[in-house]
Amino acid sequence: MNNLVTEWVKVTGDISIVARESGDVWFHKSAGIQDEKAEPFATPMMGLGAPGSTVLLLDGAINLGFASIEKQLARPDLTLAAYIVALVGAYHTSVNTPRNLLRASARFEKLGRPEVAAYLEERAREETGHDRLAIKDLRALGVPGEKLVANYIPEGIKPLCQRFDDLCAEAYPIGCIGYSYCLERIAALKEKSDVEKVQAMCPNGVDATRFLRSHSALGSEANHVADTIDFVASLPANDRITVVQDTYESALIMAHGYNQELLKSEAELIEEIQQALGETLPYQQGSWSLQNKEHGARPAA
Ligand SMILES: [Fe+2]
Ligand SMILES: [Fe+2]
Image 1 (cartoon, helix red, strand yellow):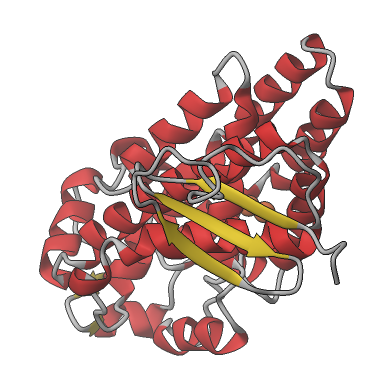
Image 2 (tube, helix red, strand yellow):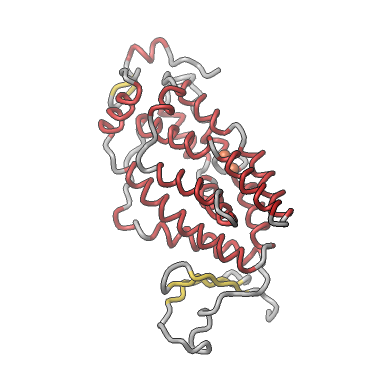
């Protein structure tokens, strides 16, 4: 019992996440005392990590980030317009991922950290082509995907993309692992029933859930998450601290950005999409138009 690992990371001015390998996790609020004995988590952790405690730090960081919007959390009914916007967001958060990760990987190679470089390179390989899944889904819905993504980045998604670009371009880009963990962990929470809900909303015979399936518990995300937990747990303490802090920062940005999009009405979303396309969607508010249903949406290539 005494050998169980305890890890902690200060994520805000006065809140640290503390996690034990035994499964205990809590948020420790600093009393602002300088005395180390009275403030056991005031000094940064220096010991080894363990998957059982590292995962609690990472998930604690996401929970804390999302707690910041808990009271204004939007929970609208799913609509096709919102799903189309989500696919556009999925495209933008995927399209630069391999390039960004390879950039960070090259940096770690230069820094003499081949194990981090190899991990990031592998992740870049795994993420390659995911932007195309979103485009295919849009096309399956009868939406010209390339044109839409070229003209439209949902407002709430912009800061998230910017954050990842910035993290990967840092001189010591370890924080990009925290960002990726945040996105993948949240994606992996989606279950079969979530995919089925979207399928039920799509016109008959249309497969527009390629991206969703692969970024859910049904796809590879759960494995990516498990691999990342093991990898982060193997890192030195100062790296784990940065990764957890950037998981928290990413969760904050994600929570506010997603909420900003979720708060928009269906009519607003349709207007944004049509503005970007310069044409009317084959879909009207509330349901697919009869014409589209009869002819069917263009199947994805
Ligand atoms: Fe992906
Ligand atoms: Fe992934």
